[in-house]
Amino acid sequence: MRTRRMVHALITATAAGSVLVACSGAGGSTGSGDGDRSINVLMVGNPQMEDIAKLTKDTFTKDTGIKVNFTILPENELRDKVTQDVATQAGQYDVATIGAYEVPIWEKNGWLHELSSYADKDAGFDKADLLKPMVTSLSGSDGKLYALPFYGESSFLMYNKDVMKAKGITVPERPTWQQIADIAAEVDGAEPGMRGICLRGLAGWGELGASLTTVVNTFGGTWFTEDWKPQVNSPEFKKATNFYVDLVKKHGEAGAAQAGFTECLNAMSQKKVAMWYDATSAAGSLEDPASSKIAGHVGYAYAPTVETKSSGWLWSWAWAMPKTTKKADAASEFMLWASSKEYEKLVGEKLGWSRVPAGKRASTYEIPQYQKAAASFGDITLKSIEQADPANPGMQPRPTVGVQYVAIPEFQDLGTKVTQEISAAIAGKADVDDALNDGQKLAEDVAKNYQ
Image 1 (cartoon, one colour):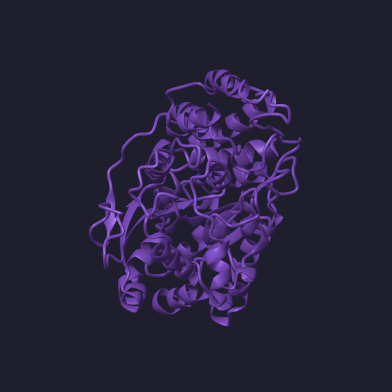
Image 2 (cartoon, rainbow, N blue to C red):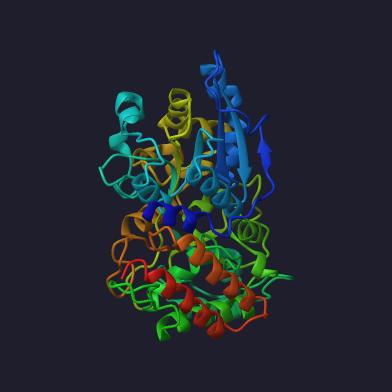
């Protein structure tokens, strides 16, 4: 009964999205078949994933004979698709990118292969080199890894140093949100068409919900108290959300209600905004002169705060293997390679060291070439990851771990529905207080399962 309810919660409101394919033949049979060495991999459409799709054929496939069919989707569509496939045991994919939110829930349901045994057998993988926060967040109740980190991240503030210099503004290393709001107002319009800041406005628990929840945390709010009392329309939650929505509406990017990570990355790299609060993993793309107009001119500061000492989130996009795969050996071989030191070196040498999928290995930060390429953001990224506290991210005890999410199956649906209304408020089509009052009712329904 409980498992059925979890499955229902995970697949509620799932919508089929259009599929963007890198390499050929995504989808199709996962049957073992004699001599069939192909695997199907489903992954989020972030720059690091687009890089591996480009590099695999001439390296991993050439060396192993394993053909990798990639399906790449935008973040919200990826979450819907992978949840649908894994929760319903459809078995279309042998490997999928998931994160710290899904791992403990899906491991408990018996949907994922444990991966520690594969990592332990591969001496070259060096499991001990993985950063502790990544290992902890991707382990199951038995202490074994159920996903291998591709890259890890926290969140921080990125800003255009040239704009700040021209305005005579010094961005604090550890700013408050009010300081950032004041700076956003001052630099709004600093260059033709430039807005003060980019903040996610695209609905989705992992899009708008991720950045907004870190703001809620540091304003003293939370989704639920330790004993599962919903707090979505509490004064602290309302204050944080009104602050966020007002900042985006006054000084945020054009089309903010449709802007997620990808849209903000484009806006920042093309000089359409002067600041951006988001994932630390974005820095590598911003520092790539092939795609960014501000490479070498970006400043970095810790995630802004109000009441807490820090407020950066903790996340890892990681490779997981559904129990339904019939190609565990080939799938594990790909995952071990994709999360290896060897792959990091390949990216550095072929694409540039700033584009290395970092944030998961201690050794990455000891590579001279990476240290040079990441001189402006490497140290603050590592410290932001180390300082993130999933057990105590706010001002009061929580019922589950998680900085930017609540680690229960129902949160995927709850967070998405609440952020849909907040996104509408950003677009000027709804009221924040009304949205949060509606969200409180939804949260109360969820809380009944745990009280």
